[in-house]
Length: 306
Image 1 (cartoon, rainbow, N blue to C red):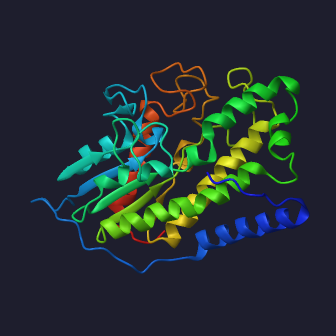
Image 2: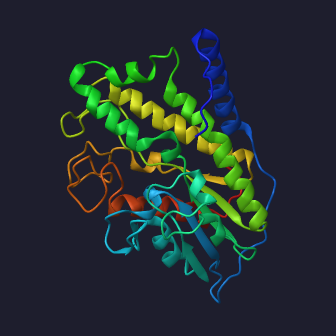
Image 3: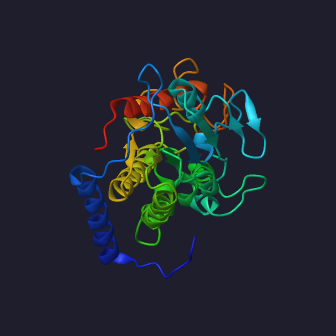
């Protein structure tokens, strides 16, 4: 991420509020009229696709059995793989990779080549789930967990990120928006007839703002702060999708009530010490299944509006 002089004070906060309001307005009002050619169908009328999945670890499914790519911590039971099997696609290429940022769309990541290289002219379905690592999911979790002991009943993490006089995480989300937009433009350039779908992030923390220390070691009032930060990230992804001729799949709504604070039998996101095969603060197998179903519902609807 480029470093620049960051504005501060009331003017910046007003500007940030205006920008977020604009994103919200776009997400509610922008409609698309662009349509792509219909996908080929099998003898039973089921759409068939040449499907490419792009994304980070929430897409790849680290630790979830069976791992098929150690470099990228990729599972054959992640949501793209489930979707490909359910849709009986003509061809399927999953290049999602744990730790990926928007930069890895253009550059190799270990043995994984630039993810956009997998998108070709004949590709007619592309899913993209990216942006969490650009914002800094991992470092945010580590920082907030480390600060929690300073004030377990307060909001030390929120205070830390707002110390400059503005919210640094909101700024990171806004800075990530043009990066995601650039990825979508390149997908359209490489596969002009593809149906392009941006997949949002699932509900990581209780939607009602309650906490569950020490299972998830954040201070009590930082739970709603971090919840709202994720919602801002998803709002940005929705808006950027709409503005760049792509659809958006909400995975937050379908996973509410199954966050990392819930009991092992009820959670679809594992806590920082997972009780099921999954990476910390990531979907388990059930979480990937639910994200797949959200994507399948969108694909089955055939809708091009958002």
